[in-house]
Image 1 (tube, one colour):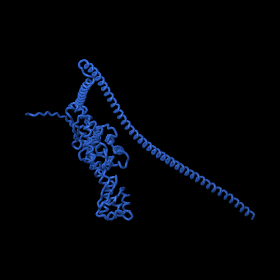
Image 2 (image 1 turned 90 degrees about the horizontal axis):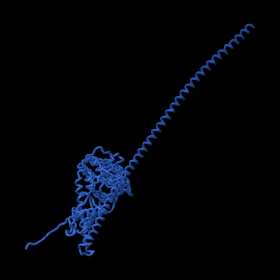
Image 3 (image 1 turned 180 degrees about the vertical axis):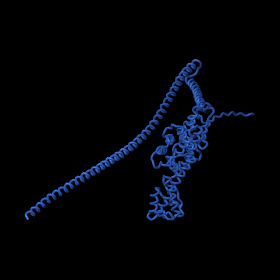
Image 4 (image 1 turned 30 degrees about the horizontal axis):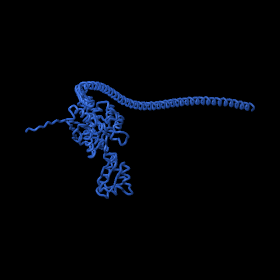
Length: 511
């Protein structure tokens, strides 16, 4: 019994020891597994961290790259702006240099003339002294009689020398005409007309009856308010029977408003929603008409490759007038004239036509932008990447910038010719009569003029002189003096021909 107990205790002890060993083994296995798991987790975490790090680095690089691109674009934009400012400054410097050169050249001419006058003065003083001595020796004349005789002789010699100098200059110019043909012809035809614009600012819309006026106004004026707000024009409803007036300085808005109102009158339903609908249709129709007019003008001028925006601007000129002359037709006429003159001078016809067609584009937007239409048009062409020679011709066609190219001078001349063509522009009867009277008054103010007549609507002045006072030599000088005074005192388009006529009649009777 004791042996069994001892064996049982021993078995228990052995079993406990074995259990402890087994538990220790499993514990160590779990620890080993946990350590392996922890290492794997750490490795995964390190991989994830490395991936996040790389992504962060890539994002940072993308951000830096984008920032650098934006900075470079901004730098490029500022550089282009600076270059544009530099170009404008260079252009102004060139204009100033040209003006300075002209002033210096004129100063030299004046200095040369002054030297010539001083030389002539010294010569005449010596001649006076010689004549005085001669008269005192050979004639029994009083001092006053000798002075009168001497002054008459000097005056005749001076006139003769002046006429001879003029004749020599003209002969020399004719001899050098072939070498300097382009410049001489261009300068000869150059006349810059003053920029006067008399624009029609109203359109009249007929109504079927006077009751329509109340429908146009609407309840508490809501229709007329909507109409004026949409179109941007003033709708004038007064006592004029069966008619209303549309008033605006913008001819395109006025045309859209006219079409809108006519459609509303024909439709009969006048209300804010209908006004908006008709306005959009009229606006689309006018815009299409503007585009067609621009394309047709470019086709008639034989020009291709114009910027689409320029074509639209050219089409807008269809609705502009100057002295009653349609600006689009005037621009086409200038383009054809410039092309004809360019062909005669053997220069680029396309460039001359292009400059002529675009010279007045500033008038299409001069009510939207401050400044003269020549400068506005040049800025618009410059913004649309037009050729620099064309831009210069546009900005110089009214003399605000000194012309530096033959094309610019041709556009000036063609513009003046188109404006001066008889019937091209309207002129009030009062201003027309005043201009003719002023022309004849200037001619009559010269000594020796018997009568003067303004002919061909003021394009020619014929002067009859007294043959016993004005000789043939003096006639040449008188025509030039009269032309110079007309240029200084009178404003006129084109040119005025001055003709001085000296006639001697011998009458006798046979008995």
